[in-house]
Image (cartoon, rainbow, N blue to C red; front, side, top):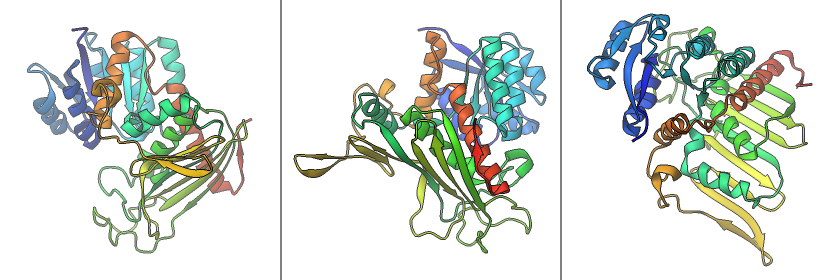
Length: 360
């Protein structure tokens, strides 16, 4: 049966309830034995809904970390606290799954990488779009060399209207930014992962707060006047050291006719191209004709490993606990997630200064 892991949840809000705790329970390899939230009632409810009968509740995460029987921590707090909580957990001898983005700042992300190396504990980041069936299939296609050299990519997460107005999403101090750090982070992570390219050379970025009525048509309604100081949209032009180019587009509010879901990617290679956008398509030329291939993601082999029978978040959790069980690297390595944070920060910096940001 393998080892059963004892898990502590730090942060019992929306992402913990919608993603982490249900996925841990479905995977069935771990028991949630401790819950922490600065709002005690949320931790109590999480313990009642997902915990073992003797699960403990905390309002101070440092007290939870004193429990030496806990093996794994899931960090589900606002972006600003990701780094310190993760570092403290690693230094307390726990493995850590931290929700995306890795950290509010690139420096904090680098501190997390160093802590994982120093402690020898595993650290991963919750980029579940890597666990989509389309992404798993395309990763195999790319690794086989079917696309050739990937020299151009387009990563996008475009909402026509979709500004989250709950929790701390509109709090720049807690979150660090708007759609760029919230949803474009998924698309950029998936793009870099599929390209297997983590060496940026230069970034140019622009951010906009231009939409006059972002509340109109927003599925979650409006917000108090002046409460939303985040960008409406952000764009980045990224040049990698090997010469490859990535265009990154993101918005919570943009007057566009065609929204594009987060985790959407287009890859252009010397042999073929591919796109994940409401499904997977692969394009190439054969026998004098242009050919489009659309793999059927509704079917597959062994769903436990392929992800074809589970949601991305459950597949992500399966892979995470399998890595812990087998003592292998997690699918999302902290060094990779750190590069995502560095590029996002460079886009924000370029947008503020009006100058390109160079990585050397």
